[in-house]
Image (tube, rainbow, N blue to C red; front, side, top):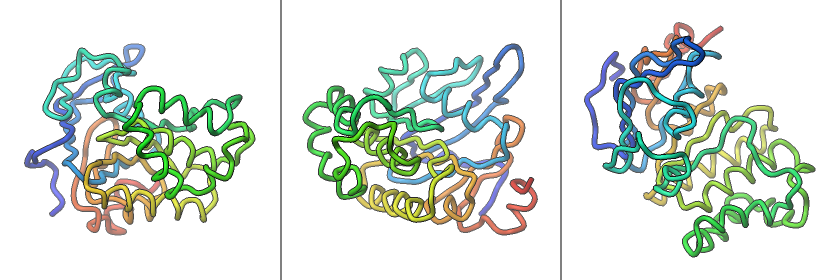
Length: 242
């Protein structure tokens, strides 16, 4: 049932009372969010409400002013971004952030250099999820289409063997056929039973189909949370339509 508050579940990630500011402007106003194991959580809201800031705070890229972040039973507030990544947080930011002057294979090898054997064991899985990656190993990342770059960015994150995969607007600016492939990949990753996903998404049909639960942000606060099948046209019209 949709509610304004939430009973805390057993969580892989727990964010409690998180506040953050940028240039003296308050961006996050006491965020509470919980990501259970083996789940997909959609983080929704109009532009400029704090979604990316929340992701950056979780990853340690934006300092918090108050609150706590616990991952896999351990407080991460004092950890650097690279330490959080080594604990099992994988982050695909908006804009993909691949290395455009490296080949696809070299982009993958950057992740493999971090994850070692565990990453190499997942390489075939990445090729199965996104066959185009294997077909384009020798091409520079910068010549790929936007959708192909997104597949590469997600593949690189998977090779770090994450427990939590954070995707910031993975469908932005890409063609429908690749959107379908990314949705299929999310479902397949979840079926494996050892990964949770936070999905920031403007394409609401995609977000609803790919996720189990949702959080809606407005002006730096959570205004609604619930099961994704409760994302009705009324809810969308009230909280998400511009």
